[in-house]
Length: 219
Image (tube, rainbow, N blue to C red):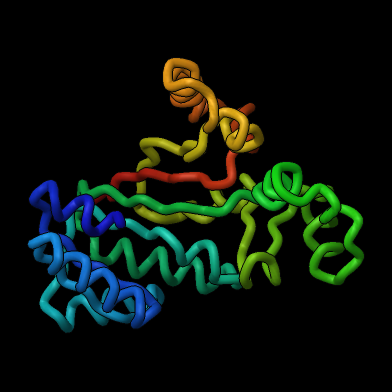
């Protein structure tokens, strides 16, 4: 979706995805829409090696959207970040997304409130992590990593990056998304405006299910 969007804007786009099926799907959709993208299968932890072998390096923008959801070990998340940074030109922009620690709670409140009564190991471990304010990695909608704010921000320490933005992607709308989505356009659009205005406010970051970090490579 992102690759096709930016290709439509005239950008030179290279897509790297762990799933071969996703790569085929993206390439097919691009062809159907008359767009040109480079679509490759590979692991974000080897991104620089894979793309440099293809002659791709020195990007103005690198999107790391997905790996931080599924890499459970901090060392693997740092490796994916290092690989992405090595592909970025000085002054280039890096975009990294996270699933928030509270995302599972928001889902349960909206769609399955009885989840808090489940006594499986995964449910117990996740709830314990939420109550302790610690990141959780393990079984969920799939094997996934739910980041605490401290861990998400701390990931970038020690790297040549200047933070430009750290924002909640859904703003404050996630907990009431279903109710707001069925409101008249003028009501929904006003809520979108409010949510956008609040999306970087520290006290509201936990209202979202995803965070987006945007940084600029120094040097």
